Length: 126
Image (cartoon, rainbow, N blue to C red):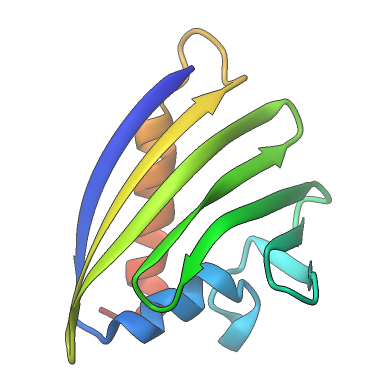
């Protein structure tokens, strides 16, 4: 199990970041997700990725628009995450802690998470 923590800042409302994190196909923001299925209670999401793989996300906490916690499984890679959104109006700080297993000895989960946050910056235009 490998653990990483990152902090990012966005020049937009926390609700916009929340939507990006919870609705992967909204506005075509996430090019890596073709479509997704969400359970009625919103606590389970299956993302169908553009490469043909799937990612299953199970939320244990969804407090809009302030925090998300849960677990994920994508092939042999699994883990847990906690995301905290701070701020309001036109400024948001995101802190994400993630524990990952199944990436192999030389994998860098922090690099993978930073790539996802860079994609978020590009998608939101902030």
